[in-house]
Length: 230
Image 1 (cartoon, one colour):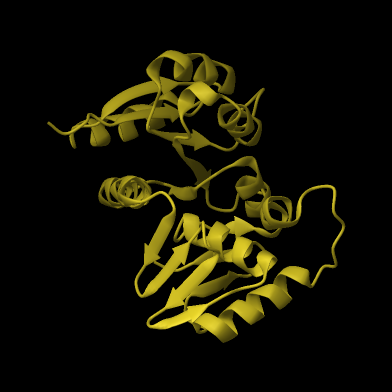
Image 2 (image 1 turned 45 degrees about the vertical axis):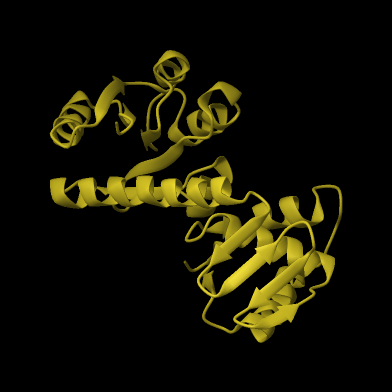
């Protein structure tokens, strides 16, 4: 029996949550709604959503702060979080990724596009979990195989032994294909927050990985960071 997927909708405009909720319920999703960041946090504790659609611009606790607090709650088991944003809103996508967002959905929302985006996000998470369940020490994406224990990468039939930082960078990007990792997140996860490195350090390591794996695996998201293509 397929697991029921629970989605928490957070927006201070009830008309929007009603509209989005109706369309998602037609697809069989279980929906809960909240009008503020504070209410979202309280409902998330008992609802335990698989995915959260979160408005950025809300009075009081905005979407960025709400996202950070949700990410800090171990009970939630790392749900997908997609920011709901109006075109032209003055906010930084970098700040959104830093806060823990996985994706963005633009207002006004078209029902078919919304459903498609939600299903794509859920499929991405399912695929990632399935890969981890098959062998948590091996990541396989296309013809690239990453062996965490042996620090070895295979590209087609070629075996590569990468320097430690290059390996950690590749492992981070490949752990969530198609997710954009911000430069700040990469610095923190690969080099550590207490280590000071030059601004071009990531770029140099990315260039070296592209030389070894091919230039079509890692995409630059200008002004934000990098993502590994599935």
